[in-house]
Length: 149
Image (cartoon, rainbow, N blue to C red; front, side, top):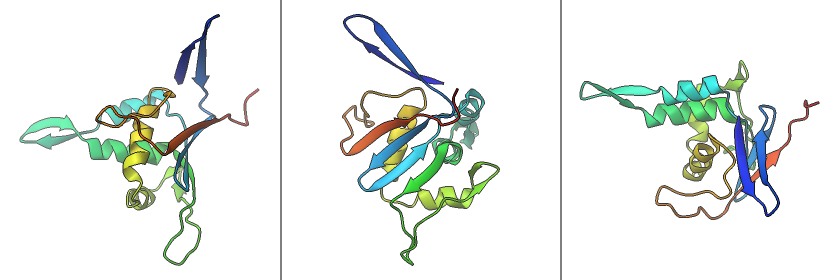
């Protein structure tokens, strides 16, 4: 679960993302709908390692792959080379490995991953790149889940 804290003059407002919510990440004409990740999925992603010089080190590539595999639920604005709308491929409610590989071929991968990583632990007020500068041209919007009571 993730949250956003805003300090207002009267009170502190804490907003939490429900697991049924979706975060729309808009990058130019593309829209990516991401789901919040369960704690189990976050632990799995943070546990990605590989051997480097005989030592286990964090495997950033594998963690990115799993993050998109588990969180990406919809994309609009993509077409294939036959000018057909690109549709995500799912197996057991997560993206197929081939589908993740295809998504990673888009020119906007860097912006998508920067937004996705910052959403991992909450809804940021603004997106920051690895140099600490605000990422321009990327918009975030919470879409409230429909199956809430």
